[in-house]
Amino acid sequence: MRPSVRFVLVRTRNSLNMGAAARALANFGFADLAAVEPYEPKWREAASAVAGAELLRKAPVLTLAEAVADRTFVVGTGSNDSRRLKKPVIPLPALAEELRRRCPDGRAAVLFGSE
Image (cartoon, rainbow, N blue to C red; front, top):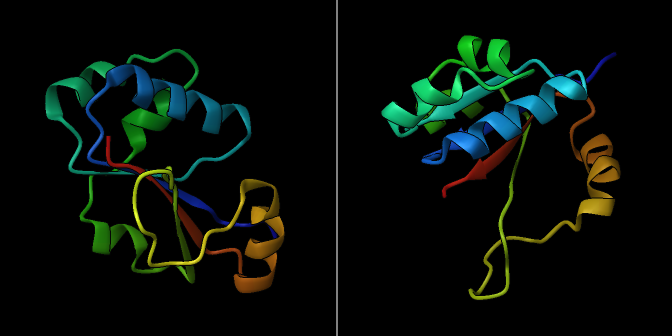
């Protein structure tokens, strides 16, 4: 079974970041991208990103609850250098194994943001 990982851009404001994320996902064969509260003028601008344009055009704008409603496992990204963390940290090299272990159906979401 091919994993069904959804990538969710949360409150993004920078069209270059949006375009780069979509391009990276497209380059690695991922097709499930959603946005939560994107900064509207920049969201429209980002849709012209080379190689990620189609992915951005098809990405729905949802609430966070909608974006993760059908997911079995949700992972948020961020830096942990200036705050006290309340959830366990999964180092990036260990993420693939953690996803296989905790999300055998492959229905995971990876959250990026907010900016």
